[in-house]
Length: 139
Image (cartoon, rainbow, N blue to C red):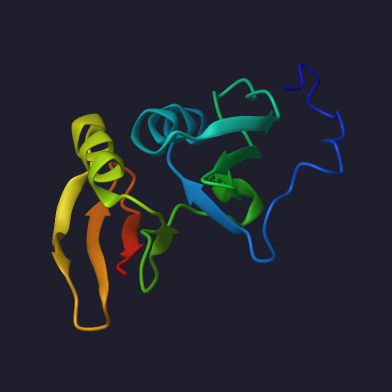
């Protein structure tokens, strides 16, 4: 992690071809929550400003990168509620992931069940309003 607000992150830390970049109310709090709920590891952080906001947090979750930042309405980036998407975790064993996320504070949106497409699947909402779909291929 960096301790300087203008440091350049390492070029080799991004994992995955498409990376979600979430704007949340409290990016550092969200990163700590995602560590508890989904086993996220912090790869890079730009330290918070004098208002406690950070423009960039880079996490690794289940082999992929997820990035976060706080809202900066004074620069044209107001906080908007998440809508019309979910983040899908493709996992081999849904039960421990589900149990850990619920214990951390996620609420159930769609209970885990075997689905018509042949996978075990459920959805959770985190305290920041983001929907997480957990998907375990069967057989």
